[in-house]
Image (cartoon, rainbow, N blue to C red; front, side, top):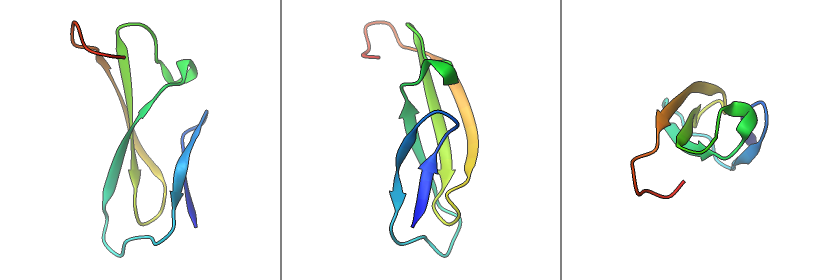
Length: 66
């Protein structure tokens, strides 16, 4: 099984890796990755290798949940 993990948190495992290069995106709640009030942190992982591909940070939309 492939772990989906950023430097600070494990998000899950891929039980059956894909043969093509699929991508899964998850919201990270870790302040060590940059999460704070008004900021959303998104990690993208490969579904074939489990590798962390990218991390993006955005301002939360006003009135949205964090």
